[in-house]
Image (cartoon, rainbow, N blue to C red; front, side, top):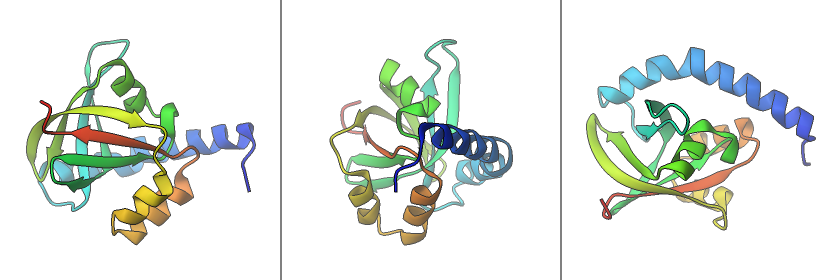
Length: 142
């Protein structure tokens, strides 16, 4: 069943508040220390301010490519920042790496999530997401 645009917007606001002020601060610290498996910090450049912006995301890394399924799709600020400037940094297990990121709208995000091999993560992304979008991070092109 598809959500109405108003319901999607309310859900996005509630999830954004919960993540920004409750879940992300301690998770960011744990990721920086390399304590959390499957999650990374991504650092983008703000499209309006030019400031560095960091957020926690679940990422699956295969070879020199990282895959993220953005819960809020192109509504997520980090996705809009990537569209404006695809050069990013990613903190994996406490180590920063540079990458080139891009949204992949023709990819199936639900199938991509299933390929992560983390059913609990996939269930949470589906539960809290309103507009799933796959984002690819290429570590080899930097």
